[in-house]
Image (tube, rainbow, N blue to C red):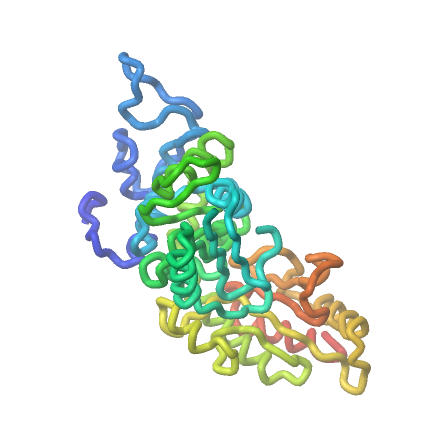
Length: 388
């Protein structure tokens, strides 16, 4: 099968496995590479009449490698008609607020990743770090009703960082207008790039600054080109590489997380396991109804620890016990971020600072691709009073 005749209804696995092969659709130059070439040029030659028939002017505006990445991101989200790649997830979030947020009602959940005359409904499911599940369809319907009743423009945004489009399809199935996420995490998957991606449908919305009703893509593209936050060629190339292995990585991520959550659920030193893949999670049914892959619930979870047996339950004392447990871990690394091959954990309250509302005994865990038996044994020895 040649790149040119890939089936229009190809599975997400097939699209990702061949991510970038059809680069000749982006640029007219083709040497028939199986791995897409990396375009490092910052400027492109004009035609004799001063136009740019190849579509590229200056790499701050766009470049072939980013255009290819954005095409792949659009292809894997059902109902998507455009995508825009940025230098980080926070850059992508900033662009959305600048494009649509001025003079807007911004509706946010109370458990949200720190840092983020119309209604903007900004959602994250599951939440970070307590993994609360939001009824996205119900919130969208409620916001739409409110907007229509009061004559307000309405825009829904869903952060899909923790699941990626492979596990959670949001535009058509959930009625979301725009998804955004940190591609640094699962999409890249190797802890070696910073990136953010916005993906949306073609519909009109009221933009900031009195620009009237325009297609959602227009203000996002304008800010991408003028603010200098577009993703650089090499980072685009790295992200395309990471996308190829996303399906197989996610399967192992999810399998390991499901097993580890059940281990924690029965461990005497764990008081609460926050993981929507467990039947005991209050949002389990709702979560499963939104996921596109049966039995695959993501690889992010949080646990809350108890103090030593017979010891005090004072929050500060328990927090000290948490630090002792984390210090005994040998495979799980204490680091911020998630979604890469290596398993990570962190005491979120320490990261979030003095205003944090996160429980002192909570540890957020990103389950990686290591052998499951090694992951379980690492926590088993770390949670024992002696360690090893």
